[in-house]
Length: 311
Length: 285
Image (cartoon, rainbow over all chains, first blue to last red; front, side, top):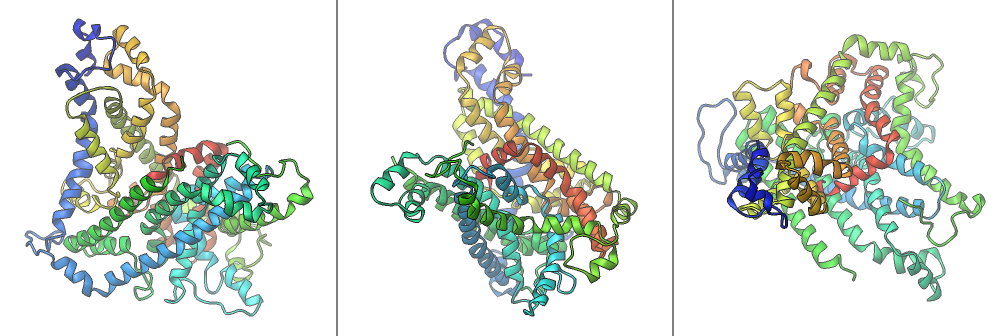
């Protein structure tokens, strides 16, 4: 439909700049953007705004009416044991998964980068969880962590060690989910670090050696770690934002149990909205989630602006 | 990615390299553990699943039984087909909508361009879970839940695709576009016949990212679909677990194998492209 717009001779005569900010150019540009704009408004902008409004209502799905309730939903959240557990558990999960998956991702990247052998094979293996269907892998983890027939407890039993009920005891459940989260995320971080390592100029290592940093350990702290600074910051925020969205493993393995011990933000939002149909309350939880994600993204942009430039 | 051995030479002796390889292998085994058990259990008879948890090789080979049970009890082929339809449907719309908009933002000067781009950046900040609630209500009201439309429509717009393609299109020389205009090509044929062929790496990367994300997605299908006819592979495994299999881990692992295999095999064939695609799109989180 946009083809016709630039066939008139005056437009064709303009050979130099990209299509000008004249009327016909503007029409063409908006026509080209129209499908995207319509889908954006229908599928993103309007529903996101509707969600913001819902958060201040007591609307329940199927109800004929609703009332504006101001901040009542947010006040309810403060007194709701489930929602508070969700906030706490999500924080615990993020604080567990982020540092461990980053440290291990960095370790593996450095190990892979330190030699030529096995590079492709190991990189593929560590990246495998990123492309695997979470639901299916969670089912595999459920079997491994099974209290009676799971191989993990069978191995522990052989050594006479205690055999916890990994996913059904309130002390262990967040640790178990956390380890699965580390397993899911570490390959992604490793690949980002590998890219960062590749960008470090090799002569810096030679210079460090001349300056009296002979061991691999001191070279790491003198050259690798500071040069990876920007990468690390990026990986930290990315992993935080990824892990704050934990949902699949919780929905499949624990449904927030036992007794809310593994309730997390997105799961609470899902249960309140799509099982109890308390749309207003669920929207308020969504807003909390959105606020946290926005703060993290803001920090990310600030940090990257300030620290990325090493000249 | 080229190889960059840190300081030692790449071809140092295998013996000196051994500790590094050993350490990496230990980690590799830990990462592979769930896959190894998944394969092992999927060929074990029920009795052995319950008795000999630690042996990987079954005494009695029950692959036919377990995989047969999956095919007999759930339409796993239909779920896989649904997954394919949904992923390709989403990708087709995302490309069809995002590419022309990205071209306009990258290569045309027009009134309102900055505003449009500001909205793209705004869209990048919104996680997919945010519009889910109102979208669910809208689909329910018009009776569209349990349909391909419900599974595909919310993802037809990818602001991330617009952002990514805009970056790539900016690097394409203006001369190419001018030449095409002189040849009498209209803007939309320039987009599809000049710009896109020159941005194939970006398109491939995005395609991989999009397919991986939606093949593996659980959140939206869980909301939009509750009838078997439209189950995606992820939903299929969940349904199989709750309805048929329960504690029948052999059959459950067989089902898990069948839905995980397509992407994993594709990844192993085109490893580099997958890693590039997924990490290039890393900022999407």
